[in-house]
Length: 191
Image (cartoon, rainbow, N blue to C red; front, side):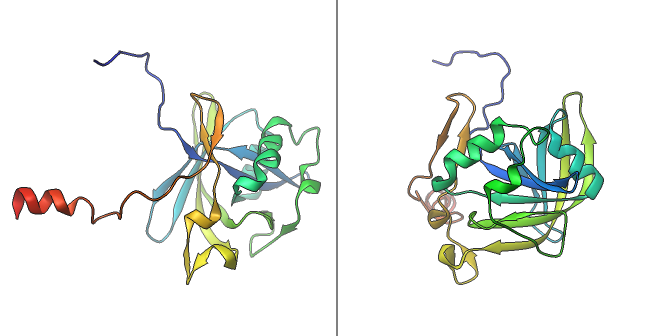
């Protein structure tokens, strides 16, 4: 039997990322779990939903650039900390070793196994959040998480965020191959 709930968002878990930009000439980061894929073709676009109160939003709007850094399980304390303190009061740039690609206002975190530098493509204003759409300009990955040129997500060990339990989760083992496991049903029903 199903129980009717209030209308709540249950699209969790989602990947947890560290979003970086420059604010007041200083690299600044925020922990965000409301990220999404807008499309998977050139130009590659991703979305970030960020509360309007965040200091990082100012830098994204001014510089038209940001980074999306995917931390591994080993960075859970640092990732949580970055989301607990504001860049208005704390210099979070000292927490990480940084590097930069083409976009000089999109600081990238060396200790994160995957990094994407994004140019701001569009901003949507909602009553409580800024929805930023970014075009991925450059992607970096530690060689240790690669199989050829493909990122092996099991080696990345990304942090997953769940709002219901208010916990970070880890990735479990792969269950099946996409675009293959369903073929058993297709063949059974339609030959």
